[in-house]
Length: 310
Image 1 (cartoon, rainbow, N blue to C red):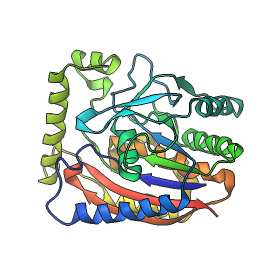
Image 2: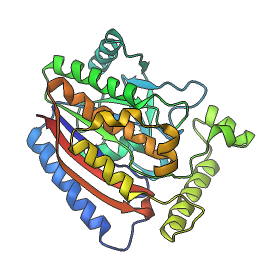
Image 3: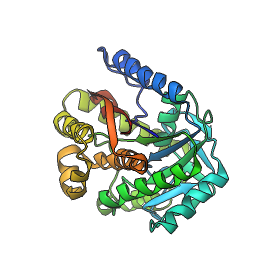
């Protein structure tokens, strides 16, 4: 079993920094691609969040497994069907329930760039490998606890081991960042309605969201104090926890504190923690590669990780 974690951003290729960041990140991603090619996974389990594109407050699960899934192509990212092995995904959901993890199931999961970006970056497309998509609510409070998210990962790892397949777990999200995602508690009534039931928005709404995102990114890159800055120190400390095998320390983190220090979307590190925890079914997680670069133009503390069971 292997684990790969990667940050996502819909702004990559749309609003790139002028320095060496893009070439450097591309080089590091290629390093991961080489490792993936050498491992040749027979099954990928992808843990990722959503950003009010596929999951809404009319019914917001903590965790959901897709037995079929399609990427909607939000913000101009890649769209299309994922190659989901339906029987395996259904068996995974049943296994989680047997292990005491309450998980929802979607037979028509809609996913956004949180799922599409890593599949495109690592495999070159959405349908290149068999993938079980696992949604972890990381944006829409109330959120599942970190300890419960790790328990989800461990249970998925137990199932994956039972299949006998060479499995790679992917965590998509983080690190520190706070894009302009509205909060239900403080949103005006029309925005609240979109957070409850905002599927298939008209083009004007999608264009307005992209405009807000681009404005936030350019403002952040200029150092505008109205936008929460990235927190490279927090990001590097998080990576150190994973490298040093101190992952359990994250269980005590307060959501309020994480949001205050690293941004409201830093809660997406749940996907990393689930993915790393999944390899515990095969032994102690051993992380042997990490990379980090802050990219305010992408509103991303951009991180990469690779590891396996020791």
